[in-house]
Image (cartoon, rainbow, N blue to C red):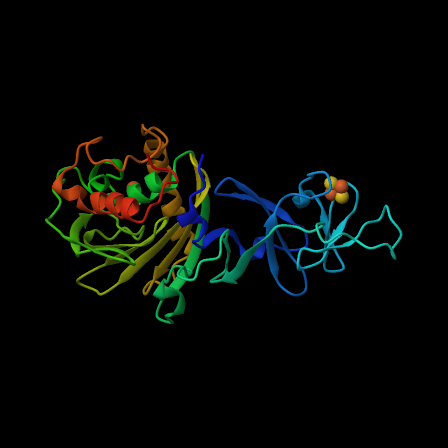
Length: 325
Ligand code: FES
Ligand code: FE
């Protein structure tokens, strides 16, 4: 598999901030094994490999702000430099080659984000609800799926399946037609027009009605959905960020934001999202080919698939190769 330089240059969620406490943890991002840990200075994301004999540093521990390899006890400071080799005298010098491979990492919005390759243009996906006091945001996930990240994003953008796969909740098979809509493609992503859909239970509150959908693709593996009730002005937004683990394995981090029903229990909304995603997972894990075909001749497309078509074309133009065929 050839490394995807585009996705390596993007920020990806790899953990919730609160998961990184005293002990290092392992993650896999774009096929790369990572160790995540925290010392008194900050959070760190390194290649999960000790240069001495290749042991996984995520099996080690954090002592005095250093990460200690579990195998022979080499200690690495926050910069990744090895500062102590117990098998030699303290005054003996340590070769500069004894260092960890480090990656950029930062904490924002309750998540830990990692970028495997420096890039001047990429930023963390901008989701305005994080900074808007009128919204209450809760997280759910990560949801692990045996599916490629682009397939998972395309499923999130797929408006035609709501009346069938999520019948009784996000649609009704008696009303399967999708109103005509357009999409706008920019260098920064994709945005759909407003799409009005009848939904029996759009947000787990049990109130049926029209939901006005606006989709945005913010990054190759991150999308946003804003659902508005045109009668009440209630807005329910979803940030849907897929962590590409392996080409056929993804983890989804989801933020749910609402500007209403602050008194309702949050787990009512997160449980509903889990339930809906379980329905999607069943289909996503069944889809073949597993890698999203960017050649539009390979599958059949309808007008309501316009957003998916735009997404596939945009991935192609952006030279994303991970999880695509
Ligand atoms: Fe890490 Fe030997 S493998 S100290
Ligand atoms: Fe779905």
